Length: 77
Image (tube, rainbow, N blue to C red; front, side):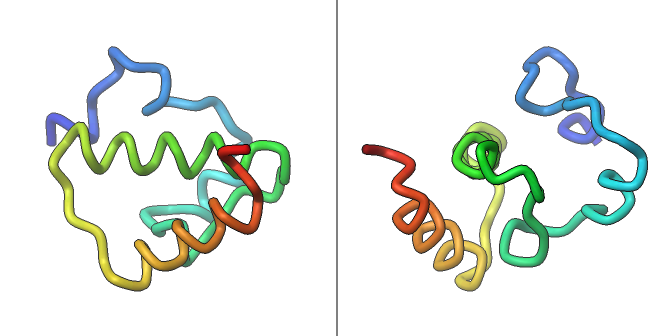
């Protein structure tokens, strides 16, 4: 409940069109990604930060997808 209502960090609350919000829902990155390609790296880094900061677990599929996408998108070069 605290995580769902946390608004002190801008990484957790991003203004989007309602259609984007509805299509994402509660999906993890391996189930949904933003269509705006220049934002993919930031989205994934913020996702991982949130998981770490809130001590949340990740599925194997989620971890593998994130690692693969960060590498393919050359996010850290």
